[in-house]
Length: 181
Image 1 (cartoon, rainbow, N blue to C red):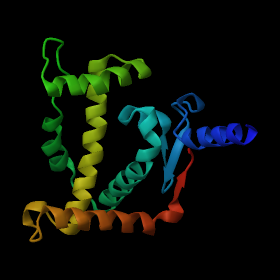
Image 2: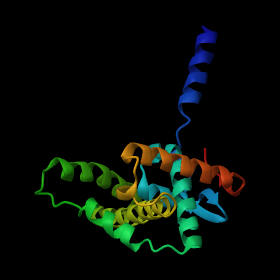
Image 3: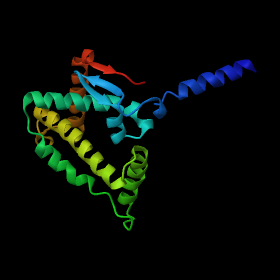
Image 4: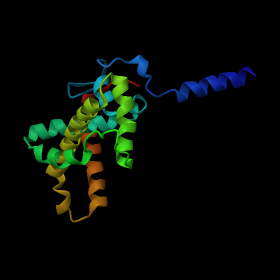
């Protein structure tokens, strides 16, 4: 009996590896990348609490891309402009399309958790997300060339991009400090 209880407690402990949202405050530092701090609050603007730990590596890659693009003095505005329209606006309640419902299903709980109006939240989420993706695209394009120009096609381009970011993380491993687990 005690063995099963101990095993159950151990399993629950292992399964509870997700970020405990109550354990962190918005101003807590989640990760430091080349001396730049990324806070829990910033991550909460992008992801539900239960997804934050799973997305830390992606945020690190995005921050590294941003830092590299700034070093290369690449203009990211055209990359951001291409993306911004794909997000759309926060939908009115009258709109019941699948896309509108999907946006509300994500934005409404996030806005409530952060104490924001859903429209205000989605606007800020869109700004942060498009900027992050813009830097990723700018870095990838600067190193690999534009996707349209790639002779290998989208799958191989994606594979090359994946390796590019893995190499970037490896080159900066000693400058990345993850503070939450």
